[in-house]
Image (tube, rainbow, N blue to C red):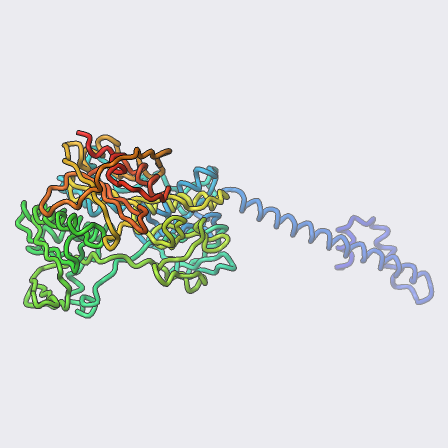
Length: 566
């Protein structure tokens, strides 16, 4: 019966079916032999037909599957995180955002995924210790909007949420885009397989990858040993949440102590000092150096800066080394190595940054033993399809040697270059990044190159005018983040006229350093420059360092910055 059905399926005439059935029952050696032969041929044909049918069916299913992968899936059917992205950026800070923007500029259809441990979309960090503290908006911790020194208002976020593509839609949007996976950490890298694993076990493969993991604020050993009671009254200032938390604390406590005399510590001291005058908050700043910015500025300028911070309402304590911290009653007791004691309610530790290089072990990437950070070549590559940018990159500077830089401008420039090289530019890193610090709207400086107070320095100063302030500078340039207008600029030519002017003398203690230029020398060559209350002149400084020439008269070099203009 089954055989009959099969023959019917193949449309064999009914008479032939019946004759084959009769013939098959014949005796051996008779007509039945030919019937058997016909039957074998028929079954072979049937088997071949079944094979062809099955093959065509499988091919159709495979083809349909491929079409479904290529065509936009229904939103409900899309995975929350794509299993593959062409461009994967690890870290959600300035360097990663600059790289994403650079990739999209060179490849408008590129699909870029940023994986960020931070719960927030990419934002700029400088306003967290500068302009946000000078806002009069009582809701500034929620809006995160501020007035720049030039009076214009903006958000700390680089772009609004509408700029980004939802993560699950990234593989399907027509013209690509940038997506940000917030609150996720990459914990493992398989460099050979081009795969990363997230803390929740999710795996993502990539074609090209950027590591822009930045750094984490350091703590003091004395505080780490102190226990949980002290840790609960400690802020390691770095992120939006730290700003929100410290702003709230500054309204609730009577005393805050900032440990650290560098950029961040001095900026926060000035910012909180403003509240010291208006709200009765006690602000203490202590550090081991002789004065504020003691590792960067020459001694006379560091001392002047210290007095400036004191005038902002801060109790500055130089030459202070923390020995121990403990809870005494309802307050914190800080004991210094020289026997002094400081009582306070809250501590802010601003003692530097530790580059985040945890991925080096699983990825087999080299970490620099002297400067920290991932070692990269001139094109910021750590491997053929892996780049590193920002705070975590230890790069080779053709003028100044191997370096690692922790500033906004470097994050912008290195991120942008990494993005260009990820799209085939093959450009070396040559840019001298700058950095800046503002002690409120009226005193600020910009610096470039190696600015180390242990180097010989020569300073040339002049009387400041109303135009020589950070506030005035941003009004002229139209931007509150000064490197946005100066980042790529370099003077095309620097011409220094011969002169017989005497070498400038170190200013006398107590002088008001209105504006000036400080040159840092190594083997009589200028390797670093600080522009004190002189703005929009960074292209000239960059050119001087790039040329790497000896100068007989730095007084004449200083004239290039027009410091004697009224």
